[in-house]
Amino acid sequence: MQALGNDFIVIDGEWLLESSAGKKLLKHSSHVLPALAHNLCSRRLGIGADGLVLALNLKRKELALVAHELYGGSLADCDFSWTFTNCDGSTSQTCGNALRCLALWAHRKGLFKDRLKVLTANGPVEISFLSEEMITADLGTPKLACEQIPYTGFKQGQIVNSPFTIGKDNLSITCVNMGNPHCLIFSGEILKNLNDIDLPFVSEDQLDALPDALAFLASEIQNDPRFPESVNVSFVLVHDRNSADAVVFERGCGPTMACGSAAAAILVAGVLEGRLERQARITLPGGTLSVEWSLRDDRVLIGGPARFVFEGQFVLELSFLDIPSRATPLRAS
Image 1: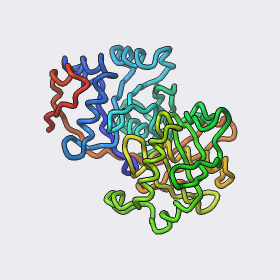
Image 2: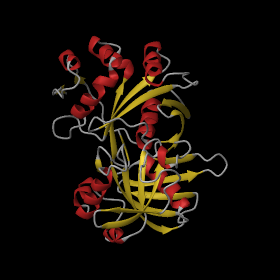
Image 3: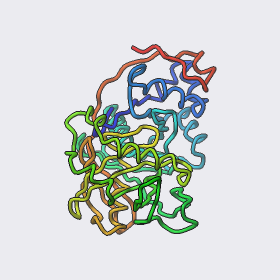
Image 4: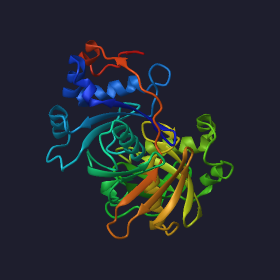
């Protein structure tokens, strides 16, 4: 599936219940999924994707037990749960585009009509389905304190338009955690690299032609020890108070066609810096998302399309599950 070119493999947890290998995967998902994602998300050796989603229908007791073991506590009247693993095998607590794809997937299966509640590591997420063109996910309230990002450059407080020196670059950054950490850059010489980039892209191949200066700086920031859990980096060009363009470098993925949580973080950061209103359109290489930061309840909603691309089967070897730390090739069909 894909949302604005941000693509994902969705595995149905119910399908896994039909085989001994699948049941073993569910039982040891935290061990197995990193290597499985690394294999399946490979664009040359696997299916190819930015991330791997395991969909857990909570109406099935076996899958509800998996969700309970992953996240603990009450299932909070949720309909579904999930896990999300980046293409490099690292885990992420949220992904706005993948959540919208999950909703479209569940809708196509007839599992809900217009509202879906998904249990995540960050708690329940509500998703509204109007059509494939407009699926809205409530990503919750942003976390802004430096220890919540996390960012160790400050002892306390928020990182809003704050000086950040790395190598020869003197930047101003704003940091937001939307279930995963984001570093937003709205000003500086580096943004001159965005002037000749027309968004959205016509082809995903244009990602390979992004200026080296952006990729290099993003990598430097992501590997900086002041971000102990790394960070997603966005370079943002604001057009007016209701629209902005951005290029996003995701931790674990690199430059991406779209990132829903980044769009949410861009709006929040833009409001904090006095550049954007609380409702705006954020255009990424893959297209445009509508984002709103509610003044009433402080929650951030992102809305946009999602698409089903294809479905198929792959053979999951029991031997693969016996050595979760090693990336063993899978036969695919």
